Each structure stands twice: as structure tokens, then as C-alpha cells.
Length: 384
Image (cartoon, rainbow, N blue to C red; front, side, top):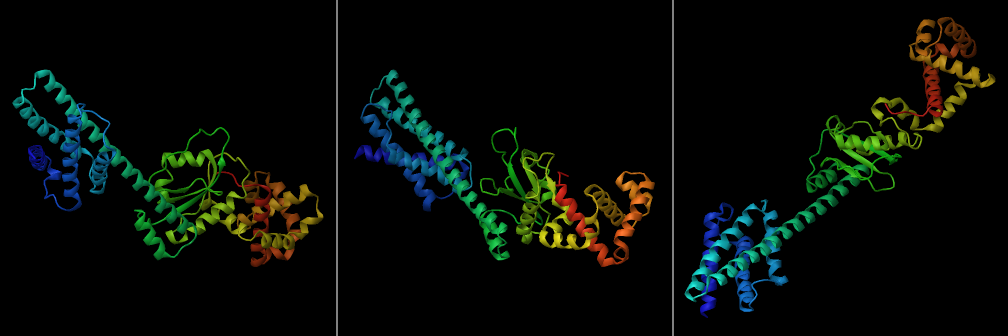
């Protein structure tokens, strides 16, 4: 009975000192918070007394009682604090316990050598309890990161699937992901030969599906995050296509467009990522390749009677003329890097082959579509 009273008195003294010396624990010990502290102090004193009675003062420590201190560590994370306050509480508790045990030991006539052993046993035991709290804190943080990761992966699935705005807002709130003003999706090919091993640690708000069959990133605020060093590392270690920058509601379209361009690139292409914002006309052409081929078949039929080499020269001359707003021979020559007289001769041949179509705005539009499609088919996009 006397031992029980002594232990209860010591527990109350320890808790009082912790509340006095550690500001974070100064509030009334109520609810789960108070119960955890009370149980932690009482279970520690009880087990230490059992160890002393067994004549060891050391482990093995009860897994059940260590669980109490792991729970205290978890509780600190839940309270939004670091472990500093809890570690301070352990130190305060150790000092108070040592003073009380020392008084009792002196009354019992314990010699100096035994007092040293007792002190070492107290502080070794406190180290074990503090280590259990650290483990609990780390476990809770890992659990929280895992939960957050799963929520962000679900959010990424919703964005890539074109989910309704309400569902996206709810998922973003649950994932602690602030909805940005703009995003860009990045379609990724396999790692390039010679790329360093390991995966870059991306900025916290960049969402990624790096392990799927068609890996991709969703980059918020592209003007900022596309310049980040770790994002740049990913973009240069793989064949990569940056989708157009769009509002959050068009995330699925940005990804779809990026994948359309990626499908046109040769495997293992180097030279940096392709930026879709710089090749929007090509994206339009890729939207319906069969229709582009049909237009080409009809509009470029005059070239079919020529040799491939001559047909290619006149096709590039016609495209240059259209892209220089029906420019003069010197304009076309400058664009193609040829002599003006050569350009003039080719333009005469183009006029002879295509005649009235060159004066028709709709026909000129279809001719440019057909010629751009032809270039896209024979000259794959490169990083730009």
C-alpha cells in the first residue's frame, strides 16, 4: 500500500512539474491528451518499479507499456507539434523521479555505488521510453504521408479522367492540394540510355504517376514548376512532351494532347522535351490523321505525276509561299535558303500545277493542312 501511495504521489509530482516547465503541456490534462500523459507517467513508474524489484533496472521492456509511449509520439504529431515538447517532458520527469528515488535510497542507507547504478538505470530507462515515442512519431508521419499519397494519386486519376469540378474540389481538399490557376500535363517515355539511376524527388505539389503503363506528371503553375531543377531532371532523362498550359478543368485534354505528340516521337529521342504550346498546329493535325490524309490525297494530287524528288521540292516551295502570306520569290527563297531565281522557277511550276486553287482561300487552307501533315509524317517533331 505504501509503495502504491509513493508511486501515485510521484506521478502527481512529475505531471505537475511537466505542466509547470513545459509550456505545451501547461493546459488542463483533459480528454485523450490528459489520459495519454497520465497513463504514460504511471505505466513508466510501474514498470521501472517492477524492473528494480527484479534486480535489473534494465530491459526487456514490456511491449504493452512501450506501446503507450509510441502512442504519445503519435499524439504529438496529431497535435501538430514536433517532438521537442515531449522530449522535454521526459527530461523533467527523469529529474523529478531521480530526486524522489534518491531521497528514498538515502533513507534506506543505499551506498554511493548503488546510487550511481540507480541513476544510470533511471536515465537508461527514460532513453528507451523516449525512443519509443520517436518511433511512434515516425510511424504516424509515415502513415500520414501514405494516406496523403493515396489521396493525391486519386486526385490525379480524377484530373486525368476529366472528372466534374465538384469531385475535383473535394479530392483536392482531402489531399491538401491547393487548386492552381493553370496546369500542364507531361507525357513521359521510358528513361533514356545513360540516365542516372534512381527517381528524382519532385516538388510536393507536382502530381505524378511514374509507374503506370503511360507515365505522366501533372504540373501546377507550369511557369514556376517547369523551371524546378528536379522537374527538369525528369524532363531530360526521358523522352518527354509538355502538354499545353490549361485551366484545371482541361487537365485531361492537356494530357491527351501531350500523349498524341509523344506517340509521334522516335524512341529514345534526345534534345530536351517537346513543348506542345509551340506546336499547336501539329496537335490539330494529329486530331484526325485520316482526314488529313484524305485532304492531302485530294489537294496534292497534281504532285503525284512528278518524281519524288521534284514533288518534294515543289511541296516545300508551295508551303513556304503559303507561310509567307503568298510572298514574293525573294521571300520564299529566304525561307527555304535557296537562290531567288530558283524560287521563282519553282513558283512558276507550282502555279502551273495548282492554278485556280491558289486564288481560293478555302483551297489554300486545305493545301496548307495537307502540306503540314506531309511534313509531320516525314519529319518527326524534335525538342523545342
